[in-house]
Image 1: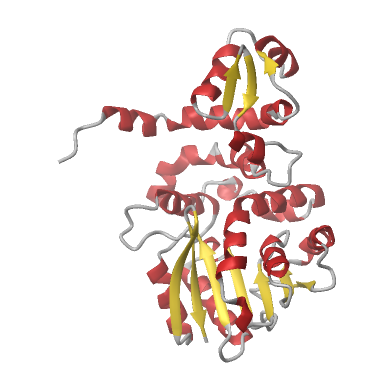
Image 2: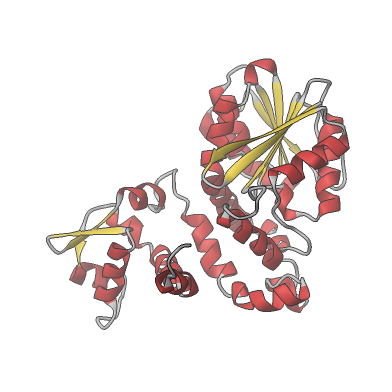
Length: 336
């Protein structure tokens, strides 16, 4: 029997303290500033307009949390903060944290209500328009959001580009492609693959700019459309990265069925998310992500690998498997 631990209870129960400290640091672009050169307390206090009452505690808190280092009175980024939280680097994932700060932090305060009502708690709660409708109508905001999705998905995208047996296939379509990083990483790692990015028309210019940056305009093209309104583009492999968890079970099954119809005999569906472990006791991030889907969507939820392969078998896939990718993400693969 394990020893009772009050420290763990307090760490989780007051976890929002550390979360908001990090989110505020990202909001103030602290890590981007420190990526230029280390700075002392007085310089950072002036540059970030921090009040002297709290500035030292705030910065030293980030040291204790492992985001900053302090040497001879000067603060600098840790390696992870320098790579992932400097806005000027392509590896920046802070866009997701910016979204968490501006959009998710407050709605998560209504989790108890969501758990009791089953209803989403974001901007749509009180009859306001769906926030994603406004997002897709604003090209600048949309580009920032899609870039954030690239940041949070990059590790899994790289793993799929290397781990999947691409030598057996010639083409792939990335459904709900966003900026297009998944199909880009596959095409970069597998020069024989011709790719398609499929998403709403508003995404097209952002996708095409990204493919130009990657030097892939000759092998990867954009196909506009809604997967609720039309068939998926045909390809040897259909990929869905962080897509299925947005939708309810019937919609998940519909998307998997459309994928089955889009591929030839021997073709494959790759679906990845932060899949919950089958015992539903280890992947805390996947379970928390499912609660985030409760906050953000009318019916979305995260799922186990067994759930996903079961839906694939229902759709007709003859062979299925689940493979871990990186961190909390795993992929389910179905072969037609």
